[in-house]
Amino acid sequence: MKSQPAIGFIGAGNMGAALMRGVLDAHITSPQSVWAADVAAEKLAVLQAELHIQTTASNPEVLRRCNVVVLAVKPQNMDDVLSEIASVTSAKHFFISIAAGIPTARIEAALGNQPRVIRIMPNTPALIKCGASALARGKYATPDDLTFAVRMFQAVGVAVTLDESLLDAVTGLTGSGPAYIFLMIESLIKAGVELGLKPADADQLVKQMVLGAARMASELPQTPAQLREAVTSPGGTTFAGLQVLDKANYRDVISAAVKRATERAKELAQS
Ligand SMILES: NC(=O)c1ccc[n+]([C@@H]2O[C@H](COP(=O)([O-])OP(=O)(O)OC[C@H]3O[C@@H](n4cnc5c(N)ncnc54)[C@H](OP(=O)(O)O)[C@@H]3O)[C@@H](O)[C@H]2O)c1
Image (cartoon, rainbow, N blue to C red; front, side):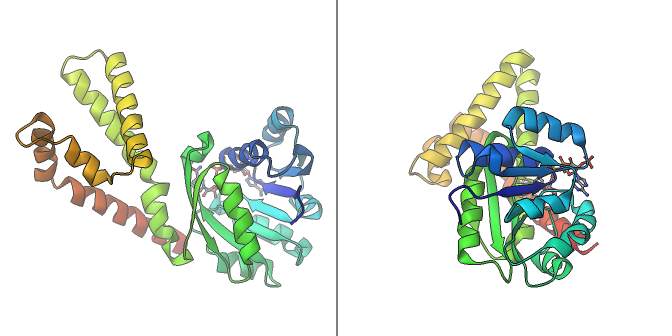
């Protein structure tokens, strides 16, 4: 791979734009070597003004300009895009797909000629460079392709490589996961307000508490269980609160939510 690889994006929406910012901020390539195509000309104009990247209305043009091609359209638009670019695909191309639920085998079959494909399940915190992405290698992608893709997604958070069979589980866990945490934040704020706090105070305190707990779990050497035990004295306030969660089978409810979201990811992939 050249030091300034040409990276193309088909789909310049939320995730595509977040990745463009990530690769440019991490100096993986330069604005002159980033190409973006989208059906929405106004999105391209905004990105061109902000990031000084190259833009085009033509998806095949992205393949003519770039070896690395990020497929960042919605899953329902993927078949149209693949049929549009199949005839200009060659051995020089390496595809990175972030479309939820579309297996690498389907992309490989649609493009033909054994294309190098890596499939990735990112999540929305990638928009603020705090994403959690899981990467899986298609049949023809090389270890170098994987290394490059990991570098790209580390530019917007953490990146873990695993077997493609686990990507539905990742969808249910960390793809849908931010919503589970948002619901917890909403519920905690509501509880604070019910107990008499001003909404603005409850909002500020709860958000900082969640951020602080997440940072402790990420940055300190103790496990989450050890951190929980350290703040739970027998007979104390935290102990009393956790007893209520235990009685409501909190752990089982969380586990059931992740399993149901995983099943739903499989259902959507098949439909
Ligand atoms: N957002 C997330 O948190 C997240 C998480 C994991 C995976 N993903 C995956 O990331 C992909 C992109 O999601 P997103 O949230 O960034 O979607 P998005 O904001 O809707 O971006 C997709 C862009 O592609 C454009 N587009 C549609 N058809 C096209 C075509 N034929 N050629 C070129 N561009 C086309 C869309 O234009 P129009 O809006 O005009 O249709 C839109 O600007 C999806 O496949 C999604 O499954 C997203």
